[in-house]
Image (cartoon, rainbow, N blue to C red; front, top):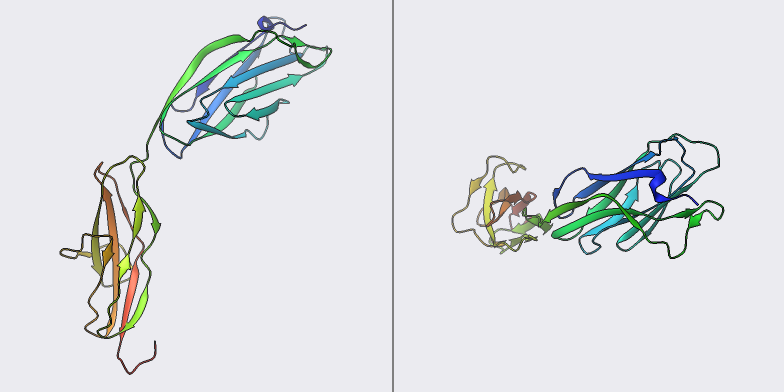
Length: 238
């Protein structure tokens, strides 16, 4: 049997604070024992499945297998009786799917080399210090429905709209802008156009451009796409 004490391992995080939707990278560093032998390894990485979701392992796992289940990853590698000198750095990726605190901890179990498997009912031994990561709610509004361009006759009523959400629970505000070209730079704020719906004037023939800036009470904002309103004479074809 290969005891857990014959190798050492530790974990580290690329960042200890991320926002919802970002990727968390966890590195598992493994070193062989004093005799530089590395015949078998069986590591268990546990994490808060409510906060994180396993995405993928690095393109190379240095011969490791990776069995994933909710809240737990089993990393295993089995070699030969020949001495193998290794110092792999396994990089595992997780999606931060919800705000909250999450902890990653690493443990190991006794391995039966002959069977190439962990010894049944063998207690897992903790390795190193657990890594805690705080996931904060995304504060920037996300626009799910952009304002759409439209053509209409003079005097016909049209309505532009934008749909946005923000995951940190803050309040959203809206400000519509007019522009002389298809750009969100240099526009002019339209007085009292502070709802997610806006009905521009169609009193004269011509094309105008509009966009909306959606801001959250936490201080973040995002610009919508530009929508054009092409007003034509009633004798024209749309």
